[in-house]
Length: 276
Image 1 (tube, rainbow, N blue to C red):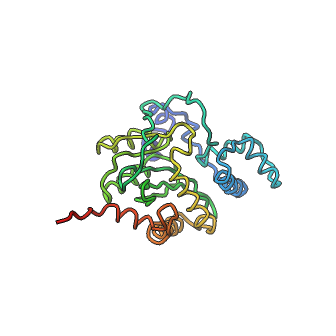
Image 2: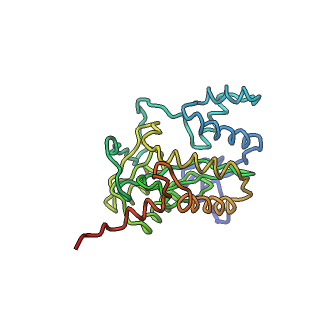
Image 3: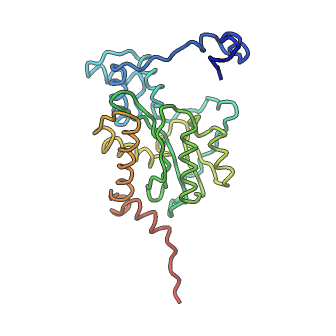
């Protein structure tokens, strides 16, 4: 919005846009190497103890000789996009223009591909820095239908992943997400509404409502991410892409009777032959 080469001074441009001059001149500081190391460890602890809040994480880190305050832990958790997971009253109000939809899957039997899709975002540490990964999966087969990496938590990369999944695989009957601002945004829900897809959203802080995506993150982290030290976003994108191709096409799942997600997804989509 601010054009530093414009004839108008930066002060007058800021006034016209109703933003502070400080915001114009502010340059974000990179995350320190020490904080990146702590964020990596918080990510690992959160995967093992998703119920742990900033106080418990502070104490767990303290047992590992990492001296850090609760507020610093809370700040890093916010930067990573994670929070303690537990049932609690939803007393917060959605952002203006963001609608919260009811959870539609309680008691529903998932028995075929493209019946229910789901999505979520997770934090991905790199050698120097971090990115965010979003994936769209089919609940029945556990198949990853599309994914995207981003350096920010804006909704754009989530919408891109959704549109790719729809273009390649048709549309599901129900699409389930959490109540993150990316998924409650008009940009995201508008795509679902336009395609006549029923929208389902998890209860606030309830990981079990989207458990299959949480299991995917555990596999991605322990079988890929924690074994690597990505040098760049391009490196992370290529390596995670290769892993997800393996996950879909070669990795058998006990919950799928040792079939791969590809086998479960495409076999289920084949029409059943009719007797002559």
